[in-house]
Image 1: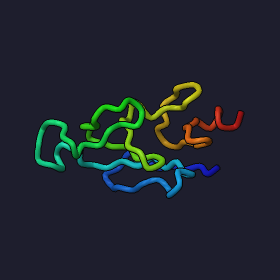
Image 2 (image 1 turned 180 degrees about the vertical axis):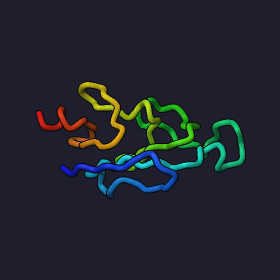
Image 3 (image 1 turned 120 degrees about the vertical axis):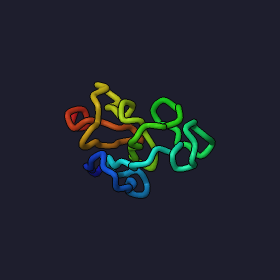
Length: 100
């Protein structure tokens, strides 16, 4: 598996094809602003963690999915995955739990 890293930044990027990587990247504009509305719309990204629309300032993109900052966490210990994450079997892990 590959380790990825990134940050919540105004630049936009996405995870490697196939979901092997785990870069944490942020999109600056909230989806509602992109469609000119202050309310979530059909064009709003849905969080892969909770399923709710993402209207936060940052949209985190990991393994070709969008996440709220608070929802991106290790599948074992639930620690926030702020700078890097690891993936195995379509699950996200912190380094400590990935190495177990």
